[in-house]
Length: 320
Ligand code: AKB
Image 1 (cartoon, rainbow, N blue to C red):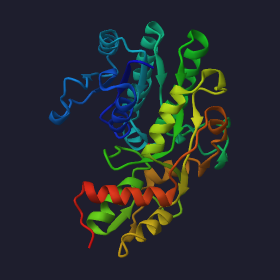
Image 2 (tube, protein in one colour):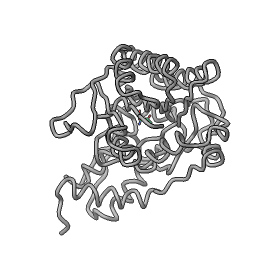
Image 3 (cartoon, protein in one colour):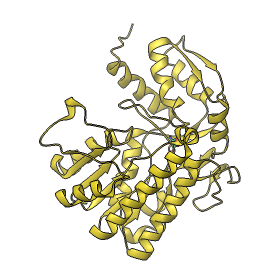
């Protein structure tokens, strides 16, 4: 990877991946792009930003040619809860956008990273230690687009030799940009509410286990996979990765260690609960560990401590 394009760069993962990749590959070699306009404070000659709507193939083409891009981190996507509210939009953005990126990658010989998700599994998938290769019959539109995306990326690799790679991300927890429209978003919202108001009303039930990961591990997973020796990759799209599996009650208990009077309530949202119930409790990520040395740095305890420290600074909340 010499010159990298990130799509969806203003989203939760994108906004941190830009900084991570720029430190590694140089500011001028990482081109951020998004359908949203760049905020004033990010305008900088040395840190390129381009407007790209991934549904417009010409917009992607012109940026690929302009900067001689050889690797694309394609993050522009509609997440699970938003997808269920607008399935047509989810299909259009997640599938047509990916198709455009893959076609351009085929022509310009770019490597492509596309995140899949725990949503690529469904109710008939084994819930515990979910294997790398198993039943994938999701019942959400987001999940359908993720399975289709995995297969499409595999196809472009075997048919055209496009260097496609991906991981199945769990819920990503971070303090820089908020996630938008996901089912795992509670695990980010809870920190903001706990620090600001000392209480949180959770939209998932207390015993709903899901895989989660702290952002530094998510960035490491994406970049390590893209830098991995291709001859070692037995799978390409997409590797199971996880860092921690917990339920809302366990997260609340961990937060209470720092905010003693934190109060957790529940008001279950049937749509998001049904989505969460269709996903695994915990993935088996041994294939990623064996093939490219995946290993997370943060568990629930380490992540909670760091989130609280960093968010206190961000929200300007002083210790008493
Ligand atoms: C979502 O909740 O939709 C995402 C995901 C697990 O892919 N965070």
